[in-house]
Image 1 (cartoon, rainbow, N blue to C red):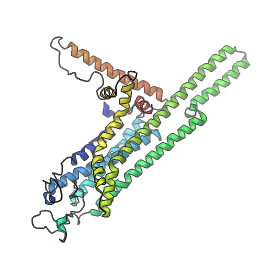
Image 2 (image 1 turned 90 degrees about the vertical axis):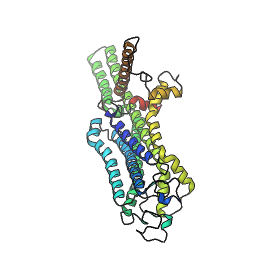
Image 3 (image 1 turned 180 degrees about the horizontal axis):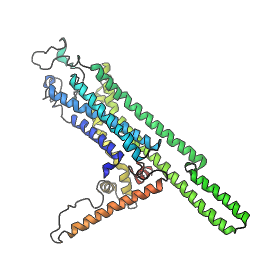
Image 4 (image 1 turned 45 degrees about the vertical axis):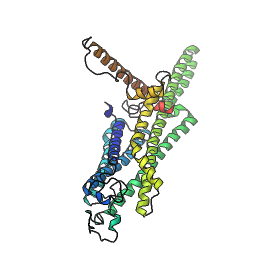
Length: 409
């Protein structure tokens, strides 16, 4: 099952958050209150629809930003602290899901209860205070004739709370992402320096011990009068095991760097998606007019986080499919093969009239065989990639050692 892996469950949570955020922006301004129709296009809603839109938006935004932090912390637990999949699943993963969900719900419910979800006159309902142009000269709580929403709505609520949470999301998320990436880079750099100085055996003490034992055994054999050919065979066998350990260490280091690159890709997607919206929020809170170019950039990039996530998630699979037939597949064919593996396209589980269901049975067998071969490939890649991590370790199972190696190539 795909969701039996921690990484896939985190990506699912991030995708759900992206969907909530995107859906909250897909109303073409129709959910904005009609009171502001003279400054906003296509306003057909009320304060109730505006509050609902703002609630969904803040839930999607808050949980989505924090899920990116969860993914980076998950990678950190794998590469730097070498935690097993079982440990991550039981000890860490509940917090990786719980913190984004609970934080987003508390944030959104508090804003809703304190009436801090108001139209911003820019297509969203996340302004903490209702300050429409027609309210100039009116006291808080007054309703101008011909309008329905009280001026200054939300000012008596918790605007300070809304601003604090906004700045936590704005500045806290980049700090967590930057810190985790720095720690990942530092750990991988240490591995590279260690390999450059001592070789692959530095990552596997058993290899060094085997080499030492080989030399000692050679001396003993010579002193005891054994034939030089036997000593040569023993030394050769032990050197072979030493090289194998070194190769496994190199593979493990390559996988660590691949994981770091994946974390970096998710972080870059975050900054591409949210930088413009964050700049808009800071300028708006400071009372500075927002340049039209920033508004356009925010409108273009903010809904694209789901697309960026899909590209990052599928890139290793597409590269693997591209090289599966010696590079003879076109990019379109490789993408199709990555999304729809062999035996799953265009076939329904309905019996063929002429063959009495035999053709469908054969197709099912082919699909099962393909799935078994894929699992065997992943298991073999894992066995070649690590000696000291348990078989369910997410570095090789969640992403697939094969996928990470493809990413490196």
